[in-house]
Amino acid sequence: VASVLLLAGCGSGQIGDTGGGQTDPNNRNLALLTGMRGEPFYVSMECAAKQQAAAAGYNINAQAPEKFEQAEQSQMLTGIIGTRPGAVIIAPTDDKALAAPLQQAKNNGVQVVEVDTALEDRSIAVASLSSDNYAGGKLAAQTLAQLTGGKPGAVLALNTKAGTSTTDERAKGFEEEIAKHPNLRLLPTQYTENEPATAAQIVSATLAANPDLVGVFATNLNTGEGAGTALANAGRSGQVQLVGFDASPKQVEDLRNGRVQALIAQDPAAIGREGVDRAIAAIKGQPVERETRTNMIAITKDNMQAQSQYFYKSEC
Ligand code: T6T
Image 1: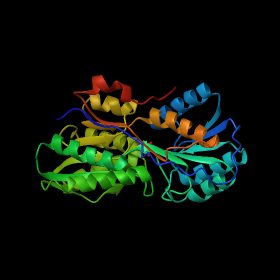
Image 2 (image 1 turned 90 degrees about the vertical axis):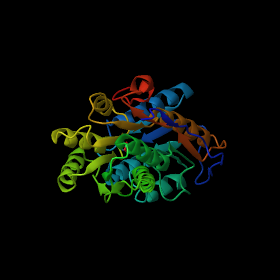
Image 3 (image 1 turned 45 degrees about the vertical axis):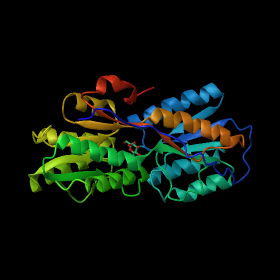
Image 4 (image 1 turned 180 degrees about the vertical axis):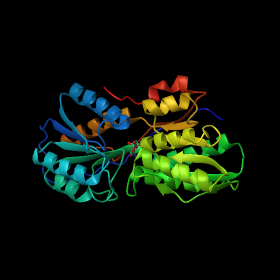
């Protein structure tokens, strides 16, 4: 297996529209609303964002819903808008449902910066920062094809919640790339609702129904953790190749102990850090890069030692 495949991020060079209601250029309050409390991808993002804001002399109010869930997140957002920060840096948990409250934020002069996930409506945020998730899905498929080494069989992609921009893009990239490998038969993509237990149930049922299962792609952290558990419980770790997305401490441990064969790691710290930079520039009325793509890398057991800077944190 080619051990390192790095997709370097880059910006689009386009400048975002900082329009909407009036923003006070001297407002030094930022809000960060991530997708789920205590989850290592968001913890890594939040730690870096807090550091960056402090270094620039800005306050940052960081919040997250208990679960990756749009109703609770929308409610928190409404509360945040009431406090009138200069900007809200948000990972919207649904690509449509958060559009109305974010438009309201913008109308109230609160600059909107999307981190990781994004709205379908590209007119609301002034900037978006994320991995190239479609390319990440393709990279996962290429990695899985290498790991299966030409062995024919069925392949399963596990998505999380429909309407999550990132995992929808990953699943799409994966499906399109796997189609180039006629020996791999892609099963219908299934949704885990971002619950490890649901991912585990789906993998167990798929193993029973498809004895020729050779590979699984788990499009995010929780999904990958659940898939790894199911394969281990069935005694199939390492026989069915598992490619996950993200690099939580548990996922890294699973890679080390052979439950998982590859991880596509993102750079949540860069997303958080640069998200703060975009928010501050937008508040000051400076030009803002509209789209930023951060780095992503395929990590296997062979190269994991050298790639530890990509491992996520579970606390700051
Ligand atoms: O994979 C990340 C993130 O990129 C995605 O949008 C949602 O799930 C994670 O937070 C991992 O759980």
